[in-house]
Image (cartoon, rainbow, N blue to C red):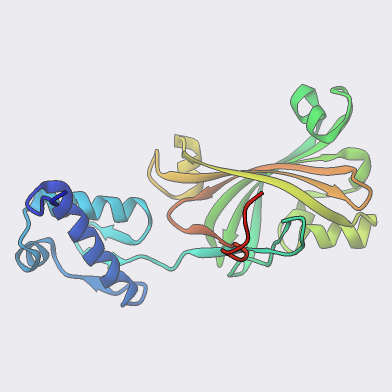
Length: 249
């Protein structure tokens, strides 16, 4: 099959790849040549160039500043998942940067049907509900909604959720030692309210993360769902693929 190197799709891909290489060779905040200069250098039309740039803006590699031009975006916050045991579980090292929180909502509510199922509680049992904006080095990064059995965290205050490691708090104050979690991730976009909190445009790409955490006895201690900025956050996994010569059962 002969590749058509004159079509718009191929040209857009070529421009996108060129810009990716350019960004990777520069530092955050470095300027990117103007659209006119790039069009002349790459031999493409302005619409083709803008289409490629739009893709990289949406994925958080390039930022546009009105009246100033284009720049290499700030580095993404990377969370690495690394295989830990033979049962294919993962360890969760700390993500980069200094994490703090701004508590948006804090209170005690009835678990309800869905959260009750997650935490193995009756729908009428009270849970501690916390919504907080997670910041990295002072910049909004995620919105987090936590549900905890209220009886487990008696005396917990909103100010306890502003700084520090929450799992360390559970261990040191309440004697709860988290052991493992089941976590799912899927792509989504932000609503108008979420966009305001995260300081991104409406319908920007985001990562929806849902996690159920259990202690050493298998008791559910935390159900949380979070929304992470797609332009600033990424998850990297290390995969052990085994010996290619070993037959697959």
